[in-house]
Amino acid sequence: MFRKPARSVKTEREIELMRAAGRILGGALGMIEPYVVPGTTTGELERRIDEYIRDRGGVPAFKGYHGFPGSICASVNEEVVHGIPGRRVLEDGDILGVDAGVLKDSYYSDAARTFPVGEISKSARKLLRVTEDALRKGIEKARSGNRLSDISHAVEQTAEVAGFSVVRVLVGHGIGQQMHEEPQIPNFGPPGRGVLLKGGMTLAIEPMVNVGGADVVTLDDDWTVVTKDRSLSAHFEHTVVVGDGGAEILTASSP
Image (cartoon, rainbow, N blue to C red; front, side, top):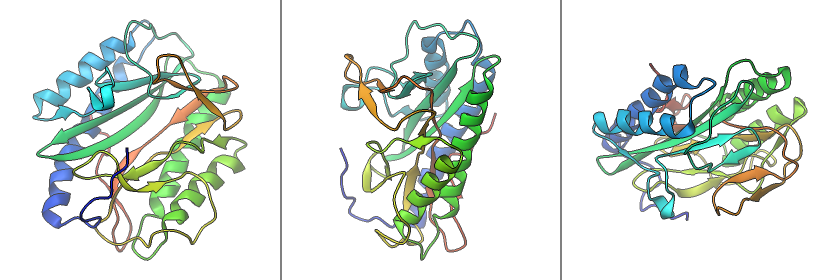
């Protein structure tokens, strides 16, 4: 699944192409927020995002990727990642993780957000807040001179201090002309280890945080990953480029 790119540090031209893919994806995730309401199906959300991406010259990167049937991953409640969109109707109190990718001019972007559906529980609100904060803390460590595990450690600490657990068997990743490139980015571990971060590296950082335990299982559809204890899980992700003074987010959401 992960392939080492010919050049882990991207050129400015490559980064500009990834910015274009990222703008489309960020726009798609911003656009969909008002439609994540009780009574909507995950298939309807997929249709809207697919149309949005294609109308702007991109290709929904997940469609057919390793055989995945959807243009987005739509993961509800205890579903961590890779939920297949379809006829499921969202209900008040659900949380929905939407993960999507865009391919444009041979370069990829990858991002995810977890949305509240109607009025959610206090625990669910805390989970979303903490997971998004874990992503922000991880991104803050994506700067030249740091080590890869500085990102991992920041994510883990943010989640665990809040009483939650991070999924350990799924990781973030490098990204560019391939959806998944090296390096893999765990969401846990001690700081100061791993690859030395350099300006121009492009990474998809993606905390997956559970209310309960860290263990997950894959359902019989061979795609949907759920928490083993069926506790709630949230997922936030951005594609970023490492810089000397900090990371640039390429997939910032916009309406």
